[in-house]
Structures are given as structure tokens and as C-alpha cells.
Length: 249
Image (cartoon, rainbow, N blue to C red; front, side, top):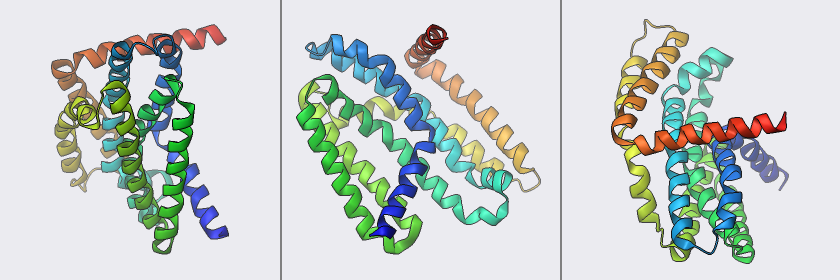
């Protein structure tokens, strides 16, 4: 049992390092007060949550892909090639990070609607799934444990989106359609990073710098063409975050 608790704590402390949790938390902190005022208007609430989901995944998807594809040079640069065996762990954690906003945002809908009982039940179901995943996968080591948590993430998204779909008529299928463009416009940067990784003559620092710079340029360019609404929303949210920080100083 102590081993299970130890492994669970490792995962619990590792996954928050993925940027997606911080991105999601910031957006939810900004939007929750607004959504609470329109909790009885399902049309406005659905529109608002669809916007939050798109903006979150618009930022989250490219970051996770960049970390996945640059995992090896990042690990070597930061903690030397003695830790190369941890590359798959980082990549799997990025997949978990990519899923996190999907399950979290859907669960937050229940909180806004005041369905605390259902919210608690779903949280208990998730905890039960985590425990089952640990019991099944701990014998396969850290990699097996992380794979188990990725599967739990997908299952949590499926369960949470089922209820948000019933409440707001915003089904899992609709959500996937909303975020699919961000995966599509990520393809060119993915291809470029894969090509850069094949250039053994480049230093790890140069690989990381050139890949990130070019990837963000291409992603932003394609976003301007196909996802301009999300860019506008991000600029607006950044201004709100700046105002929040200024008000606390």
C-alpha cells in the first residue's frame, strides 16, 4: 500500500508541472464569476464554455506537441543524457496534459450549475478509476502508471462530457469538432520539428530554439487564417489577467 501511495504522489506532483493545468486554472478563475451570473441561461453558458474550451486547447495543444517532440533535447540540455530514459515519461505526461483541460472544463460546468452532488460523485468516480489504474499498472513501473493515468484522463473526459452534454447540449462529439482545427494547424510545426530532430549536426539548444521559434510563427500564421476568433479572445484574456495582477499590487 505504501508503494501505491508513493507512486500516486509522484504522478500527482508531476502532472501539475505540465502547463495545461495552469492554463486551465487561469481561464477558469477568470470566467467562473461571469458564468455564475448566467448559470440559468443555458444558451449563453454553452456559448461561453465552448469559447473557454477552444481558447484553452488553442494554447494547450501546440505547447504539448512542442514538449512531446522536443522531449529528448530538453532532457539532455537540462539534466544530461544520463536521464534519457525519462523521455517517454515526459511525452506521456504531455498526453495527460493535453487531455486535462477537456475533463476539467466539463467538470467545472457542473460547479457553475450548482450541481455539487453530481460534481462530488464524478470526483469520487475519478478517484476510484485512479486507484484501479494504479493497482493494475504499478507492476509495470512508472511508465505503466502514467499510461494508466492517461487512460483515466480519457475516461474522465468521456464521463464528464456526457453530463455536460445533457445539461448544455454540448456533447463530446461537438467538443471534439470545436478543437479539431487546433490539431490540424499543428501538423506543419510537428513535421518541421521532426525534421529538425533528424539534424544531428545541430546542438540541443539550437534545436530547441529553432523548433520553438519556427513552430510558433507557423502556428500563429495559420491561426490568423483559420482561428482568428481564438486569437482575439486570447488578447482579451491577457488584458484581463494583466488587470487582475495590477489590482493586486
